[in-house]
Length: 121
Picture: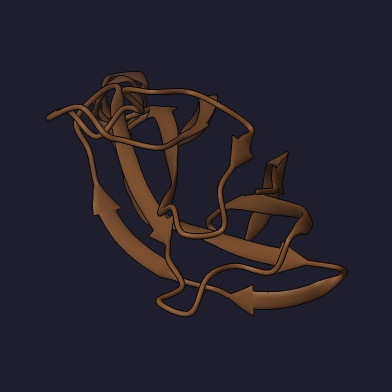
């Protein structure tokens, strides 16, 4: 019976866990942020890179928030084998209103972090 427990324990994948949140203007090929900032112009695309560890499938999602109102809630299904980055972005062809924003990060439905940013001319 102990051999069966060892095999089961060895086969279980470590769950996804947040290691870092990056926000900025551009992405690297590995989906990390190339140009980190928390201040954006109204016409810029805003990127967030959710960096995780773990080797299990799961769901990573974000909530983009402006003045307490959810603007967008994209969700991505992932199945990573070790550290990786998941990219989300938001853009507004009519320009973002100036003000304070935030992005909340969720892994498998649980909030794991947030980043504040500002849009200003």
